[in-house]
Image (tube, rainbow, N blue to C red):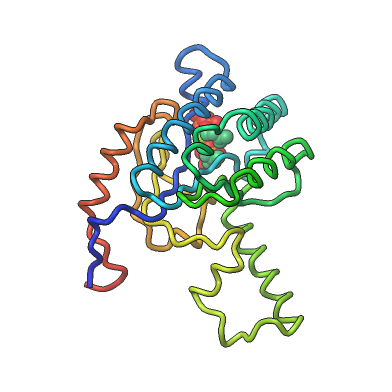
Length: 236
Ligand code: IPE
Ligand code: IPE
Ligand code: MG
């Protein structure tokens, strides 16, 4: 039985790619692309959650992104601190709860503190969830979940018979539902170690637009594309 796709997707995920090329195209430093991307995220995120989407996951920094130059990594880390402590007012105004997915190692205390701050400030909000994937890897998330499962089993807290596709979600960084719609900007046709477990039956849309230029209008076009899809989940 195919699913009625006229419903607003519950969980949307975005691989925000192309900041560097956006800047290079304009003769600017890559960091200017990240700055512009952060502004896009604030406007776009509020728009998406106002449309009735309940969970928005965004790929902000992958575990692999530490391979980049120290200059770029430092710039991004400082930008995250700015965003979580000073900006993001619009998410707070819209009663959006901010959560994080990813490993805590490798992140400075300053970054960790700013993450805690925004998380605390918004923890009682109920209008929607913004899940920020920072120092995140999809394979790492599955490994970390496996370790939690092994521990629970070892401590007698888990009956292996009860472990299934649904209960596995509880062991992921945040117990969020499967992704209905995945968007990747910038023309790359790959997943780059994003939310592998949650993506099993996502509808995917790839757009050539660099993330800083991806606006609300283009999101609405993507949404129309999503509504045309026929989700079968293996049925007919
Ligand atoms: C995405 O843009 C942002 C991060 C990975 C942090 P990129 O920085 O990957 O931009 P391109 O892909 O080099 O254009
Ligand atoms: C994926 O983009 C990570 C984020 C958007 C944060 P990358 O630019 O790092 O991915 P690759 O290297 O093109 O696969
Ligand atoms: Mg990229």
